Amino acid sequence: MMDPLRVAMVTETWLPSINGVVTRLRATVAELTRRGHRVLVVAPRASDRLPGVLEVPAVGVPFIYGGQPWGLPLPRVSRALRAFRPSLIHAVNPVLLGWAGIVHARRHRLPLVCSYHTRVATYARYYHLGFAERLADAVLARAHRMADLNLVTSQVSADQMERWGATPVRLWPGSVDLDRFRPRAPSLGLRQRLTGGHPERMLSLYVGRLAAEKGVERLLPLAEPGSRRHLALIGDGPARKELGHAFAGSQATFAGAMQGEELAEAFATGDLLAFPSTTDTLGLVLLEAAAAGLPVVAVRSPAAEEVLRGLEGVALVPPGDGRGLVAAAERLGGLSVAERSALAARARDGIPSWARSTDLLVGYYREAIARSLSRWPGSEAGG
Image (cartoon, rainbow, N blue to C red; front, side, top):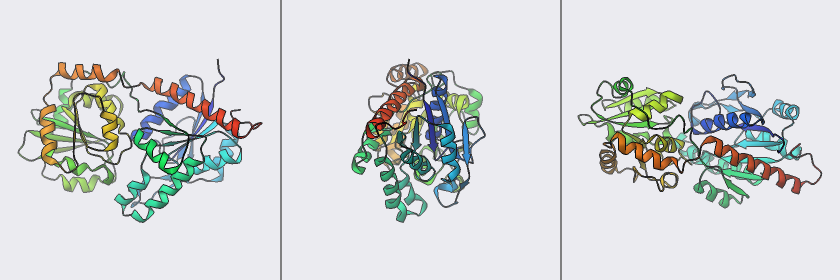
């Protein structure tokens, strides 16, 4: 049996934020801990206070990514890392705080893994910061070129690594809690709430951050006044007020953020998932919906095409094609419970659990340690 690892995970986002990156990290930390590995999470101070988390002072500017707190790479991070004595450092989407982990790893010749989850540079243009796009790309590219191993969540992101000249690259696939996201009986009470008291309407669900880069306005045709369609927007974020104006008078319900069992219940209660984003690198919610047997209508993008390839009960429509969006929703939104269960059964065979994904990750960690030892023979890498 191999020795347990001591993993220092330095991340730009953590609780109480609710997004695909946090979902992945929380599940991964739980799985690593269950296997006997030690994990130190270094995250911005906005996080909940949890054991094993070092909170770092953070700053947030309202017009930059909706005021998300960005952790500061202060000297205390390096002191905490020295005290923890990690086997390796994993920098998650390193933009600011992540660099504290990168610098520490290189200074002490420790194995370094960098993972790419968010198209930060692309997001800049949605916050009137287009001038910073090239700078953000340069920062991320340099970080990934310094890593012993780079992790990506899709082939689209792997292609980005190739353009940056960052090698080697490994796929860390999206995963799902298959015990939670599964076919189950719908909740009539929740349907009443999500449809604003009109449970007879076809219910489309949007699940995600309410933010400019998500393209939520593309879903307006699914909430057309006087139609038999209703849209429930599950999530919160900096664009909540603007979207309230955009959807005023429509057949839409702002349901707030949901997670865990409540979100799984919503998947069982809705008629389809509507995914409007063209900026996501993965779209974890797509896999969760498929595992639950919820049909998916997504705006066409490289990431959505990759995630949904080979799955049944899905439709891709071009950005801006409102009529196509409605037609696809009408076609998929009427599937029976039996048809949805069959979709889920076939989809679940190809969707990895978090346990399987974490087994793969541990293998990548050990590969990074071996590569680091080859780079610096005689170092304490991995110790």
